[in-house]
Image 1 (tube, rainbow, N blue to C red):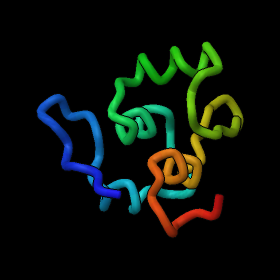
Image 2 (cartoon, helix red, strand yellow):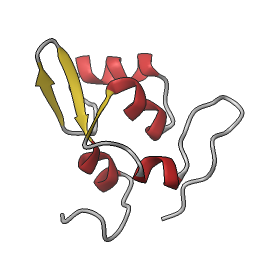
Image 3 (cartoon, rainbow, N blue to C red):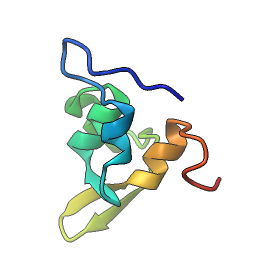
Length: 80
């Protein structure tokens, strides 16, 4: 799968950036990888429509990077 470079809005990430992410990421980073703004991501979390797997660590919400890779259909990196 090809992920284009970030657009003029600063949204989106390159494939290299997505592959370089740590095991868990914050919601703002996940939103950027999905090409949406953080407000949209937090609204989806509240509405329970956010498409990625998350865990709670203390008072913070972390997104599982493997879930992001599956959602973006980056083949060969994560088993289904």
